[in-house]
Length: 219
Image (cartoon, rainbow, N blue to C red; front, side, top):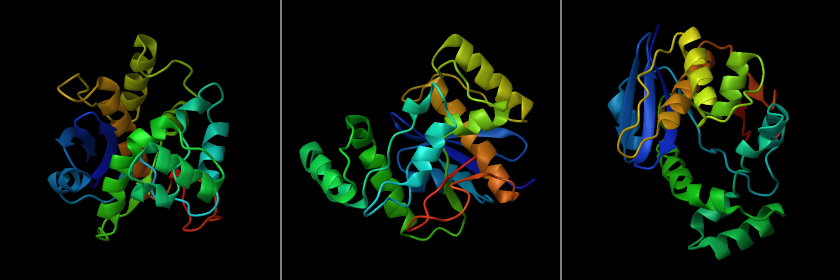
C-alpha cells in the first residue's frame, strides 16, 4: 500500500508517523519540514484544527464530543480565524467572543502557534490531501467505543498500543527529547485515519458539508 502520514503536535514541534506497512517516526520543528521529511504520501491526517470558523462555532466539535461520553473534555473548540492575528490572550479571547460568541480557552490559545503554522502551510496548497483528525475519535473508531482510560495512564497506553498493533501499526513509541509516548501513539492513530481517508472509507463528522468552508473531523 502507499504511504500515509499521521501528525500530532509535541513540545519540540511536530511528530509524524509515516505508515506504508511499517511505521517510521518523524520529528520536525515545523509542519512544512515534517511533511517534506516524509516524502510522497497518499494523504495526511493531522490533530490540529483546520478550516477555522469565521462567524459560527463548528459542528464538528459538537459531534465529536457526542462520540466520546466521559471523554468529551478532550475536544477543544476551534478558534475563530481572526484569533490567528491576535497579539496576546486577552485580545484573542475578545476576538473569539466577537466572532463566535464564545470565550477562548487557555488550552486553545496555547495551540495557536501550531494552528497558525498549519494554516500558513496549507496556504501553499500542498498537492496531497490533508484532513483533520482527533486521536480519541480515531481510537474510539478502532475500538468500537470510547476509551475510558486516559492516554497517559498505564492502562490507557497499553490499550492504545494494542489497538494500533491490531490494525497493523506496530509503532516504536518511546519517550524522547520533546516528545511524549502519547504524542507518538496519537500520531499513529491519525495515520490510521489518513489511510482510511486515502482508501475512501473514513468517517466524516459531520457526514455532509454544513459549514463554511466545510470543516470536518475524520476517523
